[in-house]
Length: 131
Image (tube, rainbow, N blue to C red):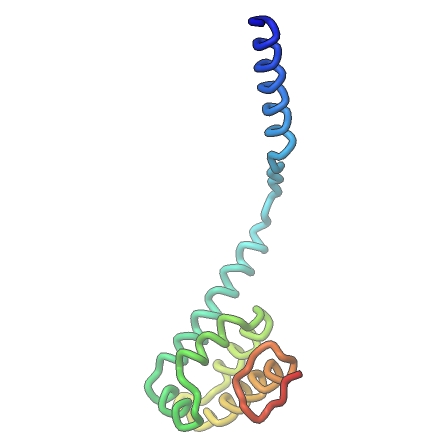
């Protein structure tokens, strides 16, 4: 009796250790180049710069005049790809200091939001029909 109980316990323990070792995921480490780190940092800086743009009081009043809240605009910025953010950030650099051409920037944001709404990624505008 004692011999069969010991065998059963030892086999159960061996089976459980074997199963645990098979289910453990393998970690893979690779080297990250300095260029990849610089690209990630640049993308984060671009995204933060665009988000800071929406913190300005004049921008928030223009957004509210068009019926868009600043929080909604910031959440849209968070959902954009790095290339879209880089494009918008490039437009921020070309805007005049006095903000005379701010309408062009808002037109760009409107077009981007409209395209994402038409593609069904967002539901911002009520006049776009979704499937």
